[in-house]
Length: 126
View: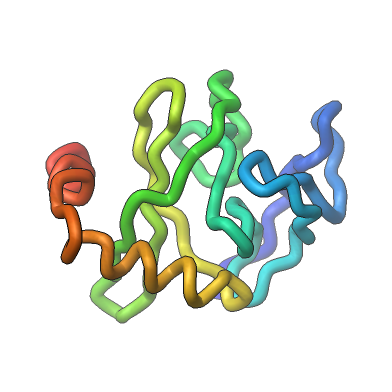
């Protein structure tokens, strides 16, 4: 279990209990089952490029939308979403949350069967 982190979600850098998704515009609670802090929308799986090297540090100045492009799995079986920044191309791996849209996760999981090129690029960069 991860320890709880103080993560800033508000527009002015304040902590809050929800944020608006940059992808689908739905209101998203910052409380997520199975993770210490939410870093993506559970509905469309989009994220925002706000963190630098450490999750929750809010050190990136990019701020662009990050699309979920692939999935990965840790040795213990835990799934990770691989996000790609639309502006700078940065790739980030984020733990999935217990309330993530299962259909959206499965669509990403089977994507390499239809077109392996984006996944191959992600693997070469990581």
